[in-house]
Each structure stands twice: as structure tokens, then as C-alpha cells.
Image 1 (cartoon, rainbow, N blue to C red):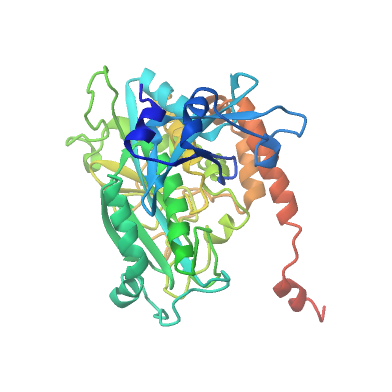
Image 2 (cartoon, one colour):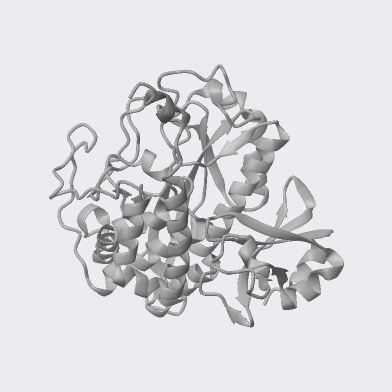
Length: 438
């Protein structure tokens, strides 16, 4: 077992950020001096859970965040400070609603079946001006700005240090580009064990926002910041590998040269589980009111939304919810930038394992352009139209709830339902103006 205090000394850390991600994906942390690290490693850092997005009351005792030394990451821009992911304990009992623990539980369940989930995410983000009201680069105005070299290099002062930081951390970054919307960027790094990917995803959001702030900018992972532009996706790449000690340990179990498109029967069962549970998964992969402005959106100024409208799968075709880009993996194109780093992976794994356990079949592959010639609803069922519908589907998916645990599902559902009821009542300035003459 890795000793946190020893690691901190070796890295010459002066402080530690003991951090957890609450149910809404917000990073919560305490800054701890080096002298206090041994006690914090043993007992955890105390938080009032009601003050974060956890389903608790002010009457509940302290939530203790127990750091996982294996996740320790020095801040590349502030190397005397280390970040460490933590899991939550209340009254001596691990909390079922702790997102990181939920993912670890799903990974342990997969390991018991002989599987290890390896995943990667494409985390898209916008760079906005200091007030967050519009994109930061006034020269970024092409109708089709994707891969624009000049716009990318105008942000070299941010993207370059970001790639250097990721290399320093050993993540294996391999490319960065300007994405499909004006002001939008994406950085890709190597896939890994799903818990590692989730930790890195959580840290990546902090890193991008911090480096942007240092340049007087704001970074946004919001699903759809601008109605006329492509939204922020979080496309997730998935493969199951043989778990340590199991048959096929260390090999990609999704790959089968004899299978359709080079994928195994196991991969298609996993894919079928994602199709089966897609409406309920939306509550986790598309968790905000704004998320549903991205799904099934009208065409953008670039010509396409790059987001799915229905539940279908295809080969190397980006107009469907699930894509098979090659003979090694699946790509789920449903999640958006606001997806929770840990709940995203946990929900996907729970749904995929259900497909495997029940030997579900995904049906025929669809190779049409689902934007220009969409499939009929009886062939390609529609995704939830809003967060309320997604939460209804989540409430009604008994198999997914059983896999994730009813205690977590109730806590998450209560908080998201409260958010939905609050935000659906908001009246925008545009709505008010449109109705002046009614």
C-alpha cells in the first residue's frame, strides 16, 4: 500500500488538496499542510456534507474524506501542492452515494466476473472571455472552424502548457485540436483503467479551468453554451480486458478477428446493455437541464451537431449514439461535457455488465446518415427530451438501479429532481421579450 506521507515528502510537497467530487460533479477540497498529512491519511479530512451536493442534512455528522494515495498528483503549475482523490465515510461507514466509491464497486464487480474496464474520454471545452459571456477569440469566426490551425495556435499559450503538464504527469497526451464550434477545443490522452481515467478526467477539468484563469479566460465544459454552435461532448471509448488472475488477463476481450467488424460476442453484449439502458443512463451521462439542448439539437452554423438524437449503433459513423471506430473498442457518443467523471464510468459499466450477464443482442447495425435520413422511432427510439424524462427513465430502470444500489439512486435522484424542478421554472429574457405582445 502506498504511504501518502512518504510520497508527499519525496515530492517535496508543502500542501495537499484532499478532494472529492460531489454528486453534481463539483470538486470539493481542503488544503492541508505537510505536517498534517499523516493524520489526514489515517482519519480523513472532515466536511459538512450538506454544504456540498450530497443528500444529507445539517443534522448529519462530519463526512470524512479518506485520501487514496495512489491518485496523488502534483499540480504542474504549482508543484509544491499535491491533489489527491478521496472517498467518503459517514459515522465510520463508507457512503453509498460517494461517486468514486460507486465506480470502484462496479469495477470490483467486473473483476469478479473476470473483466477490467479500460476507457478514454474526449473532453471538449470552450474558451470564453473573462466574463464568460462569449468566446475569447474574436478572430475565431469561420463557418467550419474545426481543426483551424491559426485559431489553435492563437491559443498555444494555453494548449502548449496543458499538453506539457499532461506529459509531465504521465498521461500520454497525443493530440489537441480546435473543435467544431468557434472557441471550442479538445485534448486527447491515452486510455487507461477506468478509475484512473475518471481521476484524470476530474483533475483535467480543474487543470484546464485553472490555466485558463491564469490567462484571464474562462473554460466551460457546459453541454450547450451557445444555441447556434456545436455543444461540448464527452465521447467515451470503451473496452473490456481480462482482469488480473482471470482467463485472458491483460488482453482485449472486445477484439475478435472472426467477429463482425472485428469485435467479439462479449463486445456486442456490452453494447446491447448500453442500448437497453440508454434512457436511464441519460440521467448520469447528460445530467443537467442544459444537456438536452445538445441532444437532438437543430443543425449548427457548422452544419451538424455531432450529437445523437436516438438510440442506435453503427460502424465508423458518427451520426449514431454508439460507434464502432475499429476492431478494438466501442465509442459512446451520448455523454456531454457536464457528465460526472465517476458516475459516467460507473453507469456505463453497470449497463454493459447487465448486457453481458443477460446475453443481450443489439440487433442489426445501422449505417445510414442519421442526421440527413433519420431512422423511424420504432427502429431508433428517441432519447429523453429533457432532464425530467431522463430522471423518470432512471426511476423506472430496476435493473440499472439494482446494479448501482438503491441508496445511491435515491440520493442522486432526489438532488437532480430538485434541480430539474428549480431550473425548469426559470424564465429567460428571450422568453419574456417574445411574449411581450401576447
